[in-house]
View 1 (cartoon, rainbow, N blue to C red):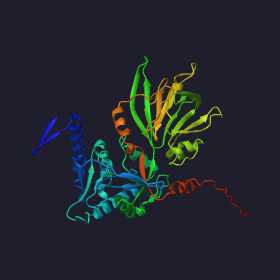
View 2: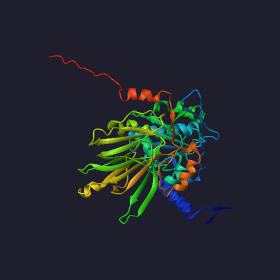
View 3: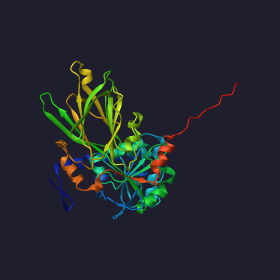
View 4: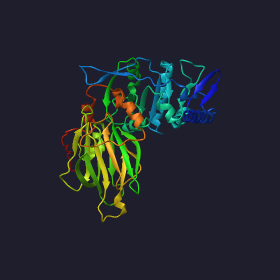
Length: 423
């Protein structure tokens, strides 16, 4: 499809043109609602921004972290927040004001609902350009994610998971996470440090911790044996299969690298990354694993058999979990709930299966094979460059993880006794 825009010709597909028009409509609709009430904010379409500029992550023999190096100037910053929270709302306004005052060349991107939430909080124009309002770029998520050079989150660990999920199967830009009084394993920086930390990031003096993700392919079986294949889903924390509100335990067949492992009768099972080892897997009795350990955690949830213990598998493992049931059990026991990073997906039925690998790929043995998916082309493109794997989280020190399990979990803390005095 060819469109004449001014003196230039623009060639784009029908889907790209539809996305552009929809993004433009969202921006104009928001702008019309805010025009009469917010004189200090102007909204523009994110589709007009330049494409993503990816940094390099340079390893050092003297550090477990990687250096974040920008070869092109950092320009587009997506800021996300915990929704409808007073503390994060004011922090976002302060951070955007700081960026516009100190780095006017940086473009700030926000989601449409966030733009509407914070627009009324600005009380003056940026100091760098007092005659013009603050400019925020927004639009459809598809138009935002392929423009982002840096992802900034304000909130807790859940805010990071939601922000990362916006990118789906696309590469995730480096993540800079700020805590606003919320405790979390992914929050190395307090928001009070935001100016100093951002200066380190933009000047290529920051360090990153690389965290891997799991890739989950869902295969659904039709009534006559037909197969319905879905796109791959990515998990930063965990993939959770469970019985939901059913009174019956789930029956799941588990295979590792094509070899049958066991049939589990349990409340469910969780497959976690090292990052997710301190989430649901830990509550179910799984090990705490450093994010630097290349592995996949397989943890049963309240299994009937006491001999089914949590496993730590190699990062290269191909894990298949198939839903099954006993012949005499009713329909309630034939549905299994599936959630990825806390987001519920469509239920699984008997015969359905999931295939889980690390997103860096695996070595298929014993005839095992990862089923093709609708997004196989994009998966192959990502696999062509290992720099696109995982998530690079900007770290504070080499010891963030050790400090986290001590301060957040009270690791190996002694019992505390309180003396009660008789009145």
